[in-house]
Image (tube, rainbow, N blue to C red):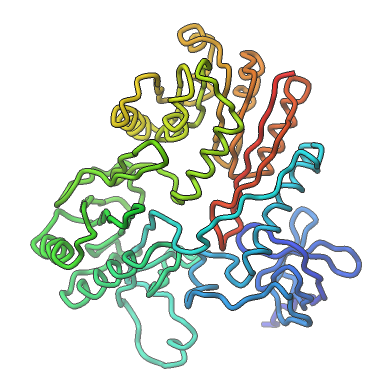
Length: 467
């Protein structure tokens, strides 16, 4: 069979895109997205697909290296997929993220560029996550060195992250720079202990094996919660594993397990059973404390989240007399953070477990001017809600990446809050939604925030004032 050949072109790369792709143009002005390049590279790219008028490809060779290139810190970079831009210096990362927000707001939102502020960088560009989830598997992703060694690696235990674009292969992680060191120590111990004591790893094709998933949560004082997902009722083997964890790691203050007999790895319909320690981790964010359970939804970059919430507070400029609606509120962390400065906080969140967490955290902080509702925002945000609680003076919005449903936008326009503070993890959908408020609201501030260094993800806060 004749091997398919692909056209090769020279590309001048100038920006970043999703999933670690770099974006650039050929001399003819054709836009190319490709793996393996960074902004500033001049490279030869092998084209492989054209979709919606845009080519994607693979970088074959670098003609001229970018001055922004750096050596990746992590031994697993480029394989595990957890970080997409470790080979790009941080100053350029945040410049590119700010530009992503600017481009979206100017091209989609049609906004005045003068209202777009400089990005808030992240002080800790490594070890900033408070939660990581790992997968056990009998299918280990083999490195080139392991393949060349001609050793047999079938059905050995791997504990780490899913290899991108594969459903079964797990990259065995030795050190991850996204969470503090204790996470590595605990994960590596669990792997070694399981292999030494013949505790089986999950085989995703045959649906056999005991160990399935591992969640490690940490707080700012380096306390740890460990949550282990297993495929069958807890046995003496697993009990002994937990006992070893308790004896070896004084940082572990809470340990749980969950039994998962399903064919998928989702946690949220599983019952988590405590083995030892506290029910929750406690985390302090400025003046409020949050309790975090094994399945809690919580911002994964605690220190930067505090700065994000402080920005939200400065955008909202509450006087203590405002009724605030907190839409897509999750565990209510923004509303609880703002509660002391507001008359009343109404939170709406689709996931019932998150609402229970919000109510618990309000009680924990002796806050009695909040009320949380479980349900779809487009259904809960209605005239009955406003009749019961009053017209909102300020609305905080932090929706999923897909942005706002048009019914939500229409109801916000109908209820007419004086201010809308729109927090987004997707500047493109944020800009699209902002454009739909035009004629009713004026955007006065846009502030990009880097919540996740070494990745392409960018947060953005917008302030909309009623006309």
